[in-house]
Length: 345
Image (cartoon, rainbow, N blue to C red; front, side, top):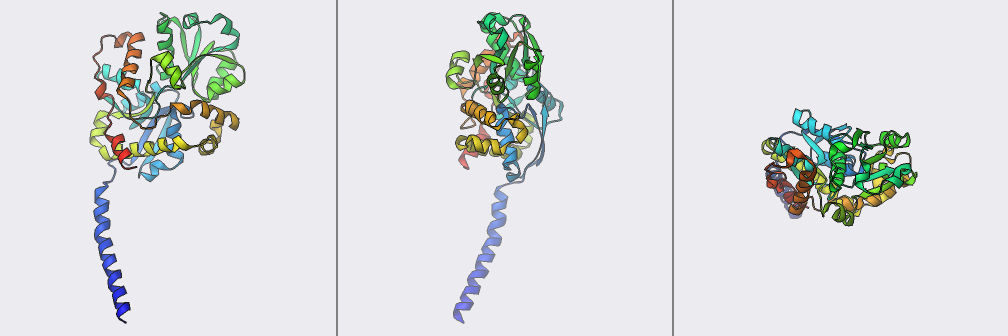
């Protein structure tokens, strides 16, 4: 009898404590200010944006209490426009957009790095390879990019500037980021291409192109761009970050968990996680492309200062608008949120 009474007393005490503790714990994690979000991206199927697809497919946004609608555009320039225009709340896009927009008086800030370097490849059509021995030989050629003004366009501009050419010395043509890009090369609509995996691996395996410049590995980035060059990031308007700190934190939490998942993921796991149409009709090709691109993903989500400087130096080389711009690189990346995400994991 005494034992039963004791058990009841203990159960009552536990229930009482639970009732006290649960609300207190809930209070330490405030609700997101804006749980429903529109996220813009330019070429979601590309490996450049793989962390976004995985965060969505693995349920990490939902886990953070976020309802994220992803709007996929033809290229990064268009997703940037959606943020500036107010139709998107957040963008996964190229880091250099934060620099360029600051020069234009717009405060856009990255909150986490997804790619340590671009992962972009410049390749020339196979029948043109013999006459293209250096970047200057691209003069007058039609070069396909995901979209004009996107990171694939910047990559071309940066490389031809090394050989003294201007952006206007080549014809830039937007060809998208999937099978449309593959088709443009196969049909002979372009003579060179600046794109990413799985598009590049598909064209290489089919024997359609010869690679001129590859930014998927650390060694190649050192040779081409002088070292780390932050690529895909998550960026928002500065005023959105300040008004919605909890929402921003949860966005970063989801991406940070994705980056950690990617560090140990096998090609098979990645192929299973993405929509089958991302495989471009060949699952083995997709897995091979992942192996080629895996080194580019950030392990920490933090943009190093040296990388920021490299990105700025690259833009200054070819963009007349950037020559005299006064850029405060410290305002292009807000590291508070990724630091907190790392501390919680």
